[in-house]
Amino acid sequence: MTATFTPKDALLLVDLQNDFCSGGALPVPDGDHVVPAANRWISRAVQGDATIVASADWHPAQHPSFVPNGGPWPVHCLAGSRGAAFHPTLRLPPGFVLVTKGTRLDRDQYSAFDETGLADWLGGRGVRRVWIGGLAEDICVRATALASAAAGFETHLLTECTRGLSPEGSAATRMEILDAGVFLTEV
Image (cartoon, rainbow, N blue to C red; front, top):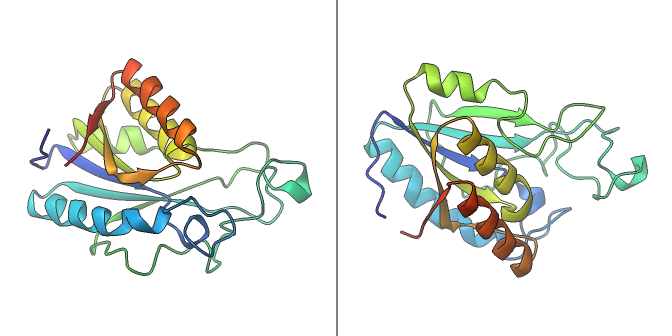
């Protein structure tokens, strides 16, 4: 399916941050390679007057998901740090919407829809379709796509615009989200 964006669409880019790219604290293999594709999708969305949203992991130092605090992940995306900044070649336009997540101290938040108000905000703008790309496909992109579909949006995963921590994780994610009604969009 080829995307033709309209004001009833939203492009949602999940966690295209330095710490998830090469040289970062929690790099996704080939994570950097999705940025040029994301930039192409941003251009299409801008041309169609679609809403553009970018989520960011924005953790406090004492976040429970970090290994030193008993969690499974290395310290990453500390609020305000270089690692939490968006990839330097990502071309987010003026007026894009920033959604921060992972700020709670009692649990992790993988989805950009988890207690952020995003579903209501998008619905209030008349958005009906959400196009999702970003990192990591088998963690935060997965959770975001499932939450988008559960919120009633026609949801599309932009396959050229995402990578997972493992090929097996990505394959399992795609099967799961297809079962949930999410569409896979290649170009």
